[in-house]
Image (tube, rainbow, N blue to C red; front, side, top):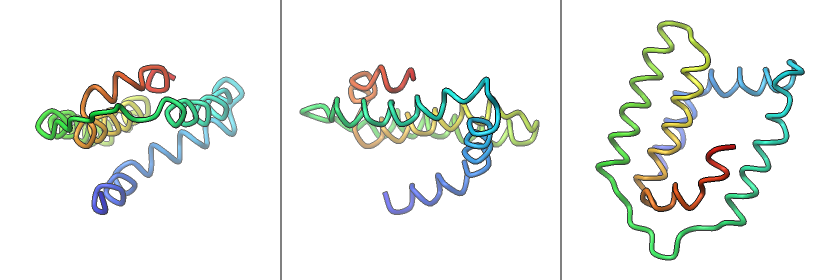
Length: 112
């Protein structure tokens, strides 16, 4: 966990900052300023599954695919795909530590 957090921030810093900048400056994307905190709140309210079963192989597979997508989209300077890879990486880390059931348990915040 101590390595994954800083590595995530380093790898996904550009997509995160451009996403927040778009939320703040573009009227068509301003709903993100409301939906992101709402999604975090819903995750917190929903809580964790009672018996988490980490799935490291599946989590690392999803994470590796997301990092590969991030690298390819960075070469193409494609923001949507970079942001999508950020969500995939978060899903991969969740599966790695808590299992796929936790991701399904948080289905609404994940969709938001």
